[in-house]
Length: 402
Image (cartoon, rainbow, N blue to C red):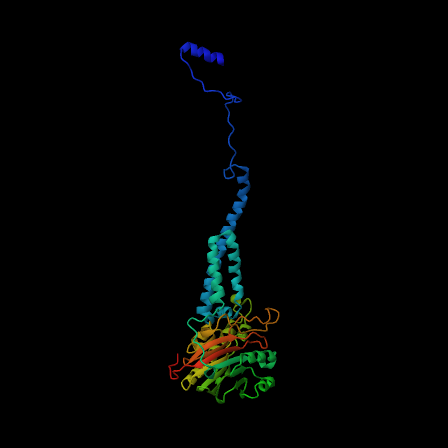
């Protein structure tokens, strides 16, 4: 090689400048080694190994998206059906009285999965869970400011409880009532042996008419017992109470349960219509009963400030309740917080004991009352929890009824 170069130099007469050769480097090596493939480049072993994993994740993301859309539409439809249609259609009437907590399970599960598989869908599932845990399940919170209670001389602590004919554990209920320091108690299903209830309030004014029982620190006077054409039964008793700020009226209510109508249906009723006609007839009787009894209660407001307490066997979200009891205001929705479920407390083996899922016992008032507090009992001394409210008459005693 050196000889060839020297010859060319001598032949041309020019000096060829050659770059210096570093020691240890073989200039004759003309091949270069290619850099290794990165993990992200196609064809690398690592990329080939990750492809199935990426495909599985993509498939999971699509599945979560599809299930999220279906669940969101289901939640929206459920909210519409139970809040608007409700007891106007037999199938949604069934939904009205079923437990609603299970409806939250799909949204909560999808929320957890979507946090790992599809973050965008997590927002949708979170909103769906909020809708179920909120309006679908009947969560209540005061909309405005709850008025502060006046001094003790002007407030009334009133309570209602279906005592289950005294066959439950009445001492539990009585102990809870003592802790609440109530001034007036109305009870339904006060049949069979209620001697324990009567002896507990022996120093109070008492009235016992049919299944309805009244106990009051203040004098009470029976006004009228109302019998409804629906089911041809007594559904209410009205009394007058000489309260600390003057007389007022109390109506003790017990309406028929939807349970007896629901028992006429079968799991295959949506396909065979078995029991549907019987259920619709039963529901029609309940509507007549609610219409009659609500009219009786409204009549009392013409004479004096009125409180309506008892076992309505109807949640406030029911179309039947909205239709017939809108002239009154629920104390729990005015000043209560939470779900306020009152029944059923004793459900056998199909549901946890003392875990009610419906708020069907209510304290209602007309427009001449302020509600300062409303709370639900916690014991299972009966199949219904008690409801207690702290109320007072507004200074403007002659205010129009809301």
